[in-house]
Image (tube, one colour):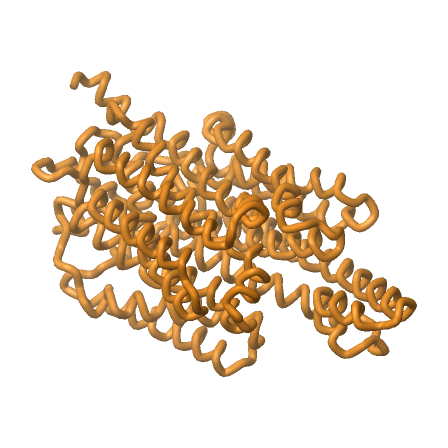
Length: 524
């Protein structure tokens, strides 16, 4: 291929992007699609509250815990190999989930799906770094990020539509079709790539990373159930911090460390990973509250509630391709700051105007949230992937995915805590005891009460929820503003492409792409 062709990247790069987009979409929808099916699963599988929560949490816990290890393995043994193997495992586990007859079977299948997702998620982004040129990389990452967010936002809609027409197992059988297409496309189109300077895997680093991240995620996802002061939650959080401290110490002393600490200390990595955590914190926390607003306050069905969130997806898909254009005009740092302020404005509209203006105000708020996410996410991903050499793109991608999972889990935990605290603080003490805990319990309690008492209970509960909703969205707005400050301080004005990226065959066996100074320093 001539130099002009090489500067454009891999000749099949857009077809490869389509395959990778399909893969990340199925992972994203599975993170949220189960929420609308929980009442059905409770009936069909005779599952209690704890079992239902673990059906959701098992997926996220295993996914987050194994991501760092999977990214390191993909750089060492081949990103395409891990991509295909992870997709196959995800598809097999989806079949097992669809035909589960007991709660523990579905929980185990969801955990296996998380393991499969952790194997192929890092490869989807790292492969893009190798097949796209610097000129097109931001656009490609923008599409990747938009599809990822789109899957999370549309998961409840897809789940609601399937439940209205089919049995609950259809939520997982759909995965099998999508995974089959992705595996076929990956086998035919995606080139293999590895880190030519890859070192042996450090077993102790691997164990510490899995245990530390899993413990942190466990503490965060269990917080809404037990509270911040629970021994279980504290054990997870404190234990996770201690183990991750040992992990970082091991990286300083190991002969073959898993993570290059020079990359971790880089302002680009700190700024982009911190900003990404903010984005996912605010989005996940807000969606957790908004879905309750739609179903419990406005009385929408699961399908209608999923459809009601579509303004976020529409705005995100429109604005994501515009992110590289905006960054060329004002620079990456300024573009991300503007995007985060737009995001904060969206949450501000939620907090201040939805109570009196109904769904119309929510459409405005959701459009601003989608626009902010669409403008920020591609640029932040691009900065993070430029924080180290392209040869370590699998590890960088897994760090990115881990940060997103942690941010999402923390967003639901913190915003959920604010929602519960404000609801309990503003609900009248004279109401029935169950109604003081949540709007959902208040509505169920009201069904067993005389008409007049039921109306008073529902009215008081919805009023308390409105105050809690405002406080929760205000927290999301505040976090977005803090993210804008973080981006202004740490993000670079422009993004430099990691060396070795955008060259067809970069990193493939038998080739040795030019190493960046950072890579040479690491392997010296």
